[in-house]
Length: 313
Image 1 (tube, rainbow, N blue to C red):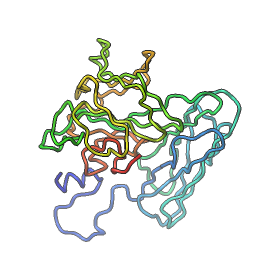
Image 2 (image 1 turned 30 degrees about the vertical axis):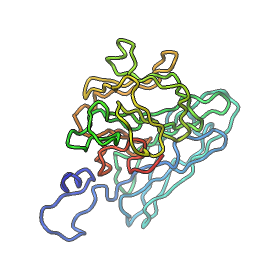
Image 3 (image 1 turned 135 degrees about the horizontal axis):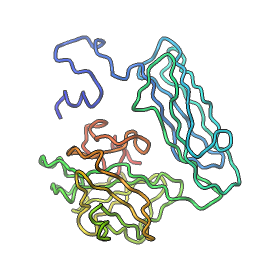
């Protein structure tokens, strides 16, 4: 990747003549963003931090108002301040969000924390909300697996597309899906099936997940199209398609994960991201963010089994 392209991905202004360092400021300087320390909580008096941060320190106080939505109710299911102040001269402020225990069999609940108002700064539109899952301990754990990264168009430039690390580029073999267990309980995927749109129509799975495939809490599960995956992949559970091809088209296709009873438990529509990227699409931040091309957040073109920065889950 050329320096100019890398700089554009990182949100920097590119100037083609010499200049002083302080002539160029990051695009998000002075803008407010939101993050959470954990995105899965038990209802049994668990907690996480909600942090508002500035791209650069301000000379004035910055007041951020939060909005809470979803199936969880503030005051009944969780407690958290809806107003956070970043003092002048500080880069961030955190508050605790804590869950409230009850004995109701209400199932897992979702919570979206979103920036509602900002006074004294601007809003970083790309980082204005986080989604949190509150697990009900009064009923059996629900299915909580997310798709965190997908590669359906590997680069064909030399070995740039060798995502499975076996030393050769093969379009169908280097495609991959990366799932992450975001619950606090192991997930048994024995007998689950992965389809694309074409194979779903004929009821022939692209991949039948073998018996004994159990994904531990917080860990990743990667399925390649084929080849011989070589590497640690962050300690993830790694498999190859039982039918030799994930068959993920660059447009007009979907990925579906189906349980042994035939119920679709996860669906990903490729169409909105069908622009022949020659790299993966990944959530940024991992687990909670929206999908974007991998090189927008890293110099790498993909990171199967690891976070976007290459560290293990």
